[in-house]
Every structure is written in C-alpha cells, then in structure tokens.
Image (cartoon, rainbow, N blue to C red):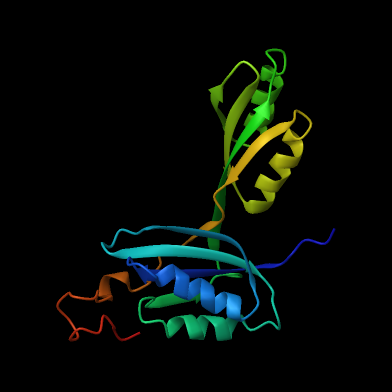
Length: 187
C-alpha cells in the first residue's frame, strides 16, 4: 500500500466560535481530505495554534489554499510547513490486551517506542507513546500481536526547530486597542 503524502499547515487564529468551521470548509471545498487536526492555546492570550494535516485533493494547490486561508480575518497567520524545519509529533493512547503473563512484553514493547504504561487492569493495559506519525503507526502495528482494544491518536502538532517569529505579539484581537474594530493587522 502506497503511503499518502500529507501536507501540513500551521495556522494561528483568534480563539472564537466559527473559526475552525471556516477553515475546514475552505479545505473541504478544495476537495482535500483532512487527516488530522490539533488545536490548542498559545502563549498569547486569545490566539490558538492549529496544525492541519491533509492529503491531496484535486490538483496540488497548497499555496493557493494558504493564500485563501490568509483571507479569513480571524486567521491572521498561516504557513505551509510540509517541508519546513519543524518538529512534528503525535501522541497515541493504546488499550492493549494483556494477561498477567503478557505485561512484561507489553511494557518492553512500549519502552522500545519511548512510551510508558499509564494504566494496568486485569485483562488490558493502556500505554502512551509520543513520536513522529510514522513511528506511531509502526507502534500500533507492533501492538497488534497482543490485540488492540482501543486507539486514541491526537494528530500531528508541529513547532519550528529554530526561533520562530510568527508575529503573534503583533496580532490585534477584536475589541482590543489597535486598528478600529477590524481585528486585522498588517502582515
């Protein structure tokens, strides 16, 4: 089976209702399939960081999608980080069948992937592993020999390896002093 090439976009958005819907609607209209999305607060109050990984749709117009996302006023900063110098990580929780005899093997397999056991029950264990998406996929395949009862993956999140100036400190939020009532800033 051929591995899908995923594109990854990093977007910073005003933390308000409807922003995620606008972003996903735009990607859907371009017939791309969102594979993972993670959203969380940043160190700047009122700004959320979104990492969106998606597979190719019709054509290969990533630059066009980034330009169109940039037009969404609630998303003042967007970058295609598919080939950027970033750390890309994902977290997975795996609920794995584990008899008392299997616990040592499940624990050893977890440690091979740099993970840890976070819960032990009479017939299963829950393990946590963080790593590159391809390593998470590999870990899941390894745990299939024990029997997987449940999988919860967070999706990718990225951060530049070097200092990044995303301009977050210069974003003017709606209702704050700055350009009158627009919530816009110069890019």
